[in-house]
Image 1: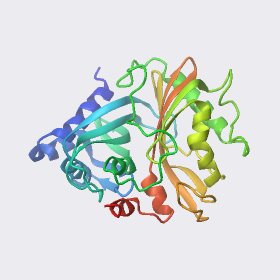
Image 2: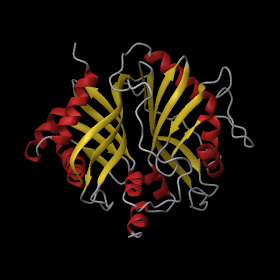
Image 3: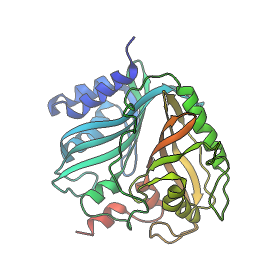
Length: 328
């Protein structure tokens, strides 16, 4: 039986590097006639293969010359949420020489790795729905025009899993991996405002392994162990958004030692404290989220996180592209 994960991966690669004259046919093979693509800001929504080719693939290919996908995680499974469907999910980088503007971001004329989180719903061997978060602030950082203060954690290229098996993993154990992640998410809702700890996250029976690695988007960066996670992300986020509520997910899947979740948006919150240089506005905000996990021995070892910070900062009144371009 054809592995729908591998078939989808091949179709996505073909759509990216097919000759431009053949792009329309390649996108037609990958996407159903009424497919919808939801893109992180400022990309918006595209409907149908022609709009997807014109609105996503052509601008990306023209900006990143000779673009290729570099998949670090590529998994699939049946959606545990009521939204339903068979999905594949990926952590990837779009790799190429950044030689032309992309969505207003000015090029560097150098090699660039545009990190992305992706969820695709599959029907009849084609993509019926796509949701993609592109880390544009990180692309700006690579050009030397980073629009935010210095990273809270360590900035790095998103690494693949330490076990090097994140692309089309052996499927056994996917339900158990997702069980671990769902247990962690349920316990994460509550937290101590003094220590920023949540129940059952750490310790002998905690959901996170003591040597957990957390890889975050530009603005946050990456960190090591729970103490690093609190210091470099959790504390500043909860001070800024103390009433945040998450978990509104359209998709949760498990595949082997991996699980992936996404909400569009996942989180609602109020901007009550300064965050990454932006003073509190008091505004109600939403946040689109994609999380990818590797589990081992019933605990979470690694977590890759994509957040639509272009949309979040726009809600806070800040155009990150405009600020980046003003740094020239």
